[in-house]
Every structure is written in structure tokens, then in C-alpha cells.
Image (cartoon, rainbow, N blue to C red; front, side, top):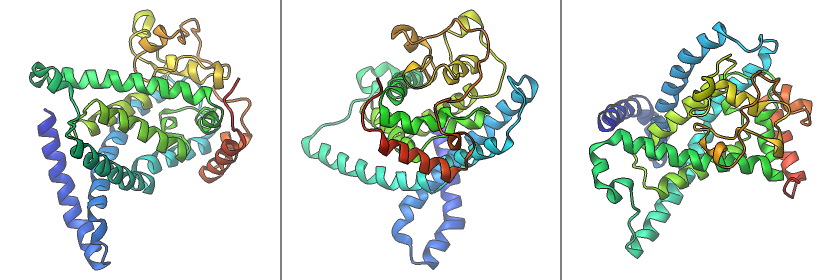
Length: 315
């Protein structure tokens, strides 16, 4: 299944690059960045697919059972800008260039020592026959890493100064998932990519893992009055479960429900809150108003200034 999808995706990526980008690179004498542009096309295709699927699933649900009426469309438009820049803009391209250089350097260093990064399939050969199980195990491991990254975002002062942009949104929708400072996005990309590299995620599986997890995260941010019930809420993060995390009483070190996909991490480390049956008002009461209602550039600048001004962990 993964090979078929990867073959189809590779062919489409190659066609788009050769038809539209390669002639422009030749004409402008920029073929030295051809590899990076090809990687960006590959990334953009996955991102476009994810945005379309997320919209098709979440938008009807938000219209059908909203938690609250839409009162600030400008704030939502700002979140859409965040999503487009995070998934299609220049920042992913720059990240690809940086990560490609780092990865090439690391692979060279490891090759010199004779070290070969292990994979689940090499440790447990039977997994070659069950790729879906392998995919699920990788999701679980990466989700565990994301849980701890999320907790650190709330407990380290300068990191919370960045992450508070995400929590300042009072008009939550499925677009809110990508509402992050670019420094926070860079850290998240390095964190996620490093864990994936260490556990041996294959190049064919990595984009699918990233796509799947982003789609689920977007769904959990939706303005959707939806709970998975007493049992389901303890198995998979729902819009209700994650809205509790975004509630005005759950900011900074007071956070609950940090889990991204599986609440089991909140069970184990005692950060789960299953007591609230309501859908709390969202936002960060301690954040400057500009982080809630300002435009993208304003929020990025204010977030950076707050990060520079906070040099020690929260109490």
C-alpha cells in the first residue's frame, strides 16, 4: 500500500517539477537549487491533500454542531494564513534545505563509523508482512514524543512565550492547529524529524505519518461539539478533550490533556482531565490582546519579544 502511494506521489511530483518549475529554474540559472525545489513540490502535494481532506471532514461538522457561533472571522482568516504558510510557504522550503544538509552530514558521519540506523522491520522481521501495524507503532512512538514536547512548551518560560500564540485564539477552529510561532514550528520539525530518524522511519512512510498526525490534530482543534463518550475519550483525543486543554483555566503550567492523539500518556503521567463535561471558553487571559486579534506579523513579533524577555522556566 505504502509503495503504491509513494510511486503515484513520486510520478506526480516529477511531472509538476519538470513541467512547471524546471523550465523556470533553467531560465533564471537557478538549477543549483533544483533538488530543494523538488523536495518542496513533494512536501506541498502532501500538504494540499491534507488541507483538502481536513476541510472536507471538519467544515461540515463545524457547521452542523458548532461549540460556539463565529464572532471573529478576522481571527479565523489569520489562522488560515498560518496554515498556508506552515504547509505551503517559504518556511517549509527553508526547513527542507536545512534538514537536508543536516541529514546528509549525519549520514556521512554514521557511514564512517559503520553504524546503520535500526528499524522496526530489522528488529522484528515479521513486520515486513504487516506494514499497517508498523505504521501504527511508529505513530504511537512519535505521539509519545509529541506529548513530551507539548508538556515542555507549557513548562519552560521562553517556550511558553512562543506557544502562547497558539493558546491565545478565542475563536478556535480546525485552522487553529497551525497557529504557531515560526521558531516554535522549527523546533517542532526538528523534534519530530529527529525521533523519526532515530526509530528508523522510512522515507516512504515519513510523509504519510506527518500527514496523518496533522489531519487528526486539526480535527481535534475543530469548533465541533463532539465527544467520543466515556470510553472513547480515553482512547483517542476528541475535539472536546482537546478543547479542555485550550480552556482559559488550562494555560501555561496549569495545562491538562496534553496528548496529541492518544490520551493514554495523560493517564500515565497524571495530566488527564476527564471531569469537565462542558466545552470551556478558550484563550489565554494573560496574553497580550495582540496575540488574540493581531495579524500574523504582529503576533510573530510580539511572540519573539516575549520569548526574549523570558529567560527562565515557569514556576
